[in-house]
Amino acid sequence: MWCVPGAVGGSEDYLVRQLLGISSNDFDITVCAPQGFTAAHPDVAERHRIIETNHDGRSRPRRVISESTWLFKCSRDSALVHHGGGTIPLRHRQPTVLTIHDLQYREFPQYVRPHKLAYLRTVMPRSARRADIIAVPTQFVKQTVVDAYAIDPNRITVVQHGIESSLGTDATSEAALRAKYLLGDRPVVILPAMTHPHKGHLFLLDVMEKYWNAQGIQLVLIGAAGLAEDAVNQRISTAGLKSCVKKLGRVSKADRDGLIKMAMALVFPSEYEGFGAPIIEAMALGTPVISSDLACLPEVVGDAGLVLPLLVEAWADAVEQVQLSRGHYLELATRRLENFTAEASGRALADAYRMALR
Image 1 (cartoon, one colour):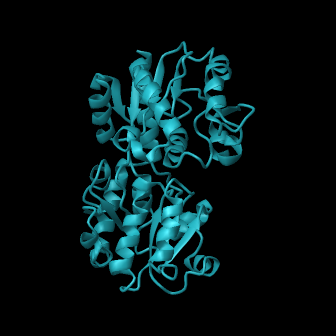
Image 2 (cartoon, helix red, strand yellow):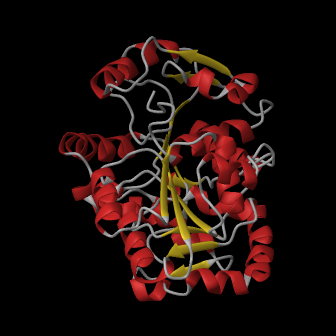
Image 3 (cartoon, one colour):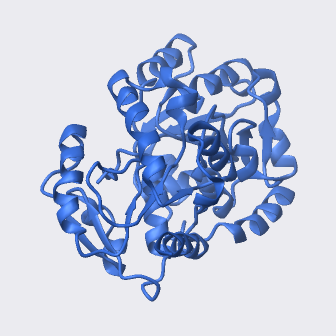
């Protein structure tokens, strides 16, 4: 119910890739989802049964009510229920797997709207304690959950993100993208993220103003509007960066893959992530990664990218560094991706289900 298409960021991709990776020979899965999920993910509908509620899930009060009524009814004959959005409704009867993507609300409460913060502070600890098994995307999140909620670590299992083998096969060509988005001839670096404060857009604009613009680099920003949208727009304007920063908003999957593929680097200066799926997407598309050294990001990047502190001067020559070692980073990325397939993610999720059913 929480997975509103296009509204929950990387968590949606995480769930969808698990559903595509899990074998129908392991479990007979029914996906209970908000209106519009089937249209957004026809590939999931080809593999699993989907039941949609009669609303799009964008209203939290209506969604919470539906979880304790409609979902409770739909799941009455199920052996197990997997809640993928970090919370468990008040009414539930079966063994439960709960996915916790991160605990950002605890680390950066200032970045969460007050009403949502109050809800998460009440519901997430209670849900974690009620779950039979908790699935998390990284060891970083596992330790965070253990520390925050005093949960037995044996009840928490890592279900890593996975990348489908078809990623990038329908990517839009660089020539078409440059013409469509008026990108000119400048080399591109890309940040695919909603404009939330912790994602690092303002940090990158500082780097652009001080170093990268003079190096002839063009920053492309893709992703929906977040809480820092107005601040980002204002900064681009006041710093005089309109000619070298292209803010494209949400784009199609084909365009997104193509933009990442054509970039000299994917830049990811986030303050906090539970995983950071764009990092492994970039690796799969043959694009070097430059990441911050915070939260789970060193764990995800490993030695297959450039990991830097969030200091503007540390990023001054970062693009040049990854270009000089491009072949080396991409070779390491190819090896690293063996750990992040959709099939591996699906197998890990199936193991979590079995643990909950013991």
